[in-house]
Length: 298
Image 1: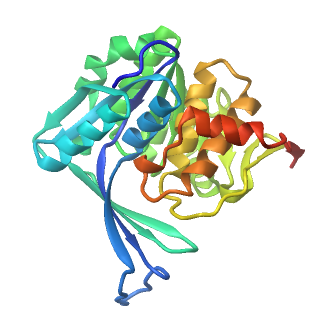
Image 2: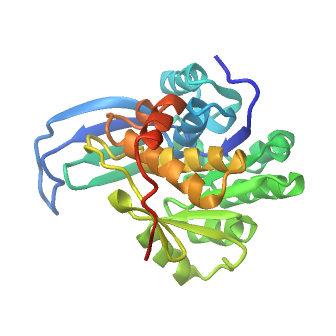
């Protein structure tokens, strides 16, 4: 059932069929390993962040593409069940995108086949322009093309919608197209280094540097994370971004919004799968209510 009322969030991005594989460790070059298990989940950074926002109570639209296949229909069905409006999800000629997360106790690596996500473009942004301009926050990621993402960001600008950009994976064309239109940029250290080498103007952005289990950093302020037993970190970053978008839509101060997002990320790592791990508002509130702020200087 769709959420109605409250803040409005739009996610313009990918939908993937995830085949998650657990191993004792990741394989090295020319090495074959036996996996511990494999499981299929609904995923894609765009869809994950949309799910996170919807479960936290936002009126959420997903803009993207799937194939005309069983996997795509299933991904849309799962989004609908989470309360996401999928009326702007288009059926493309390519098969539904696929991701293969390789998960070990120490690391997670992800291989992506874009599939239908490569079709998400300017026409999709144009179709969603009114919805984007009327939203409080637009969520953008790195798994769709530069032209469509830029067009979506321009629609957001026209309506005064906050643009939150999580450039993962980093694509130089996408970074150059979208960062100048971005209000809040969410990156880890590796992504920050890549963006610095590309050199877009970031002076207009608030930059949130995510630090994994340590939390997140705003300028010289460290906003610590919450203790968590890590089962699957695949969806943690998307839980963080979706929650940050909701908190900003609710006009929370940025540090408070990051703490809210940290709580969502800490909860997400404790459940297998990307979208299944996205926490509810009640779960995030319970974690926040039981923890001090713990802010510190870098």
